[in-house]
Image 1 (cartoon, rainbow, N blue to C red):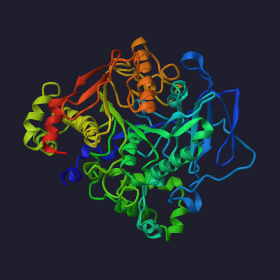
Image 2: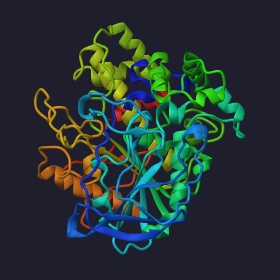
Image 3: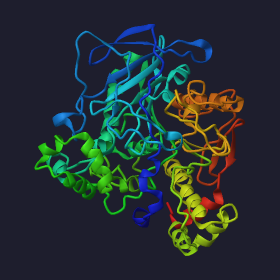
Image 4: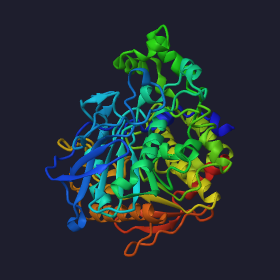
Length: 540
């Protein structure tokens, strides 16, 4: 199908969210000890959260709890094995190392510096109210292009969501070549004839862990919501398409990236890129592959262009077909869905081709809108007269706005409650993952860059007073609304709650969308004429 064949080089495929990266900072230390809990794997003791949420309710946090065996040595590039049992009481007061990934990068709000990394990284963190009992569970998947990030950055502190009567869990999962490498040798040894997507298998393992241990933390295993942003949102979308995840979650939230418009290019299985990467290191056998130095693997990623196409691949087992084909045929998980995007997602995220010619722009627009190319161009040209600027704006809307609306359409088509949002409140720009060095000097000031990709994270987690600079009353008001919307959706499958502006359910006629700013309200669609021109060329 032409959707699957479309090559949009300037979108950098799924790697468009590569800038969404995290550093290894940890939250403030606690001193108050939390009760000992009994898990399937053994006894565990955490601490009280060092933060107090609205209402001054104490929240307990259990940090660095293993949900699978370390994927090291012979377990590298294998499905995650169950977490090992331990004797005595495991002290869960410290976050684990981040999964192995590049360090020392500096890009816009996503700047990060050095931090501890390890292949032994399959750990999660739990925030739960005191005396919790049968509470809804939310499981967070961080972003970072499936190549970077971690679930324990301070911006993801779960205290505020837990105070809403939620058990909040964040996880680490394998990244880059450790989490998504596909190779014929791995296919040959797999009983499923599959390789790659180990990072998705990690998420599935975490959800199985939740099913086994929910009661210990006061959670309801029959009310689990998965949510994520950027690559984490794509993971939510992919898990909805995966038969292996069926029944492990009951609601889903996607923030700023879908999987139904992912370009799988010419290497949907990832095998060609995997062979090229491993070939550059020339191990003699699969055992030799597993003994390769992790830094050499990261270097080979850059040298071979392994990231040039989707890290999520069609492996025949975890993803038996492209997510597009699965959603198109209505085979995705039949669960309520809440999803959305921000007004200025492409700022510093997608590249701009300043040398683009008018003719090259027209060719690009033909690929996006076909016979409606001229109409689409007319919608953008006044605001973006330069060809490169116009292409950047169209590509951003195609990847984000159109992708999210199409995902919503597919879920509404199987009669599942679906709620779409659009955030146009402009938050301050700051170093999201460096709470000790948040200041980011930008021309025009911290609010001159629009509602940028990842600008919703502190608002969703209610962490505006823990990270960043320059928050104002409007920011805090929207954050309170978003925390409540997100928690209520996890509780009931519907974000509406007494005292909040009504959020009208999405449909494929009016495209009802909740506008998220200091005064949230529902509107019949956002950027409809632009997205309709794209939709005419890409029918459902």
